[in-house]
Length: 173
Image: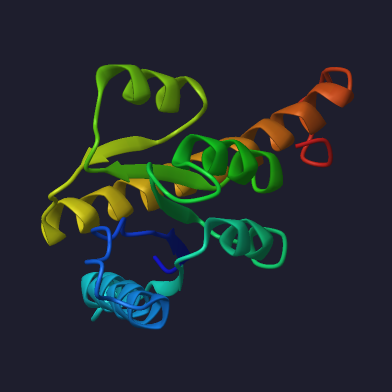
């Protein structure tokens, strides 16, 4: 099954050593973001999934309004918008999207809050490639079941619109 997956990640960099200039710090931070994006690409290499990554959660939130995503992974701790706020935004813009929160700062409280707000899963770092791929497969299966359920409900609702027909002639059946 194919689908689009959004990874709005932000790696919290170690504070710069005083001798670093702002330019060097930003360059190092940008390089870290590129490494995370490559890491995510490697996860989905040789799969049928399309990957979109962005290291700025506010820009990733904008992208939600422009493109459809089946699965959305977000980090819990990001600048300008945390993963719970991003989850809220994602569920408002794309209610059918499956949102998975990943974090190195896992707590029972944030796991409960994320689940209550509609997160499909909550994964603690460090994580293995197999765990991510399994989670994506489960999310895609969930998407398929949800669509099938919706189609069956629609069919059932249409059958309820007509009163019961009594008869057994070939023309009626």
